[in-house]
Length: 558
Image (cartoon, rainbow, N blue to C red; front, side, top):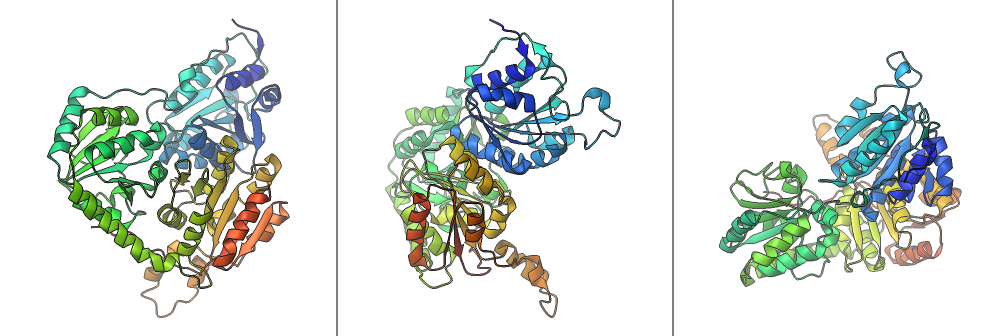
């Protein structure tokens, strides 16, 4: 049944029918549609920057399991495009919409506009221009289809009008048709080819030292239990990347930690010893494989992925299983024979135990200023059972990903795919998706400073995240390479200009936004500070003063 209505009303009702609960936007864009959303259940989250709202949409999508929507006007399109790099690299279904001058104004030096296609094409899997009202039903439907099928990734619609409102006043006579399968992701769960499963099962049976590596695809598929069941069936150590950290709990008898450049040395040693590596939902990136040195060339590979292009991309002679990750794991579990690998499990666990023993002095070190390892142990001790831990890129991901232990299946960890400053707005989006859960952001002072104004957004909407700032008033990750760059010089000169910030009191900054702010300098004060942040019923910032320019120890690589 169709009802005649203007484009703005149709737009708002169609998004509501697709299950959209939040849109994150930077004014001025789609004002007529936003006005009509007042009659829907959609929350209109006005942010302070296009990058900020893009990251919010990303955090929302990762936690909700639904596409996250973000809007910006024409002049903000370049900023919004920049925000899509992280969800593109992190396989997150963000639907971005921008305004663009109408066709008659193109190629004539229209006010505040550059061509949008080249900006969005590298960071989206689908980009289209909506010029007339008749395109609206098809293109919105296609945006949800593209975002949720195959490997989920961002899409972009460029809507006529500087603010996207050139066509929304026009009347339309379209049905509110919704493909329910595309309201969530993954939309489809294809099963694997039985012949390929048989080939993989045979390789597993021959293996003496198999290792499983779970990656982002396990999270997307919701295949945590299937991953564990598969490892139990073939009696193989299970490792993950940082992106799949929360698919396993730390105490699981099969879990051997995180792999890759930002992983644990013990985990990388285990993979190096393996004679069979089973990648589950992984794109086998340089970060995961240490520049494709881990596993060693010639090691037998099995790879499960929903994207056929990824199968064998970086490892020749891979047994590629094209399927939904969960379906692929279930098929392997059903056909594989249980083989006892007592010695392999025991020897791999010894490596893990030894690694933890090496970390213990720093995890328990009570000296002041604190080091990040101690902060991570303190956070482990207070992290609620339902917490979502959102980590920034770089050292923030490395510290929290390896040293904050997840002991409860309802705890979630997610990290930036590479964009410094991503974590705080993403945490706000995560809180919008799961208001009943505790959302904790772990970032450095450099990362937090990117999007400080979004404290006001969080306060205005009651999105009460807890942000822990590892505050050493510098960008410490760059120090090593700066030292190399200065090594040929007789003196350091003004090297500090390249990585040092003034000391900032982020607790006072938070308080100035009418949020909760507290400073922690001693380890024994952290627990009380975290409890106070939880009890404040406000967006909270815990400014933890840590050792200046302290360097992380990178994981062993072959």
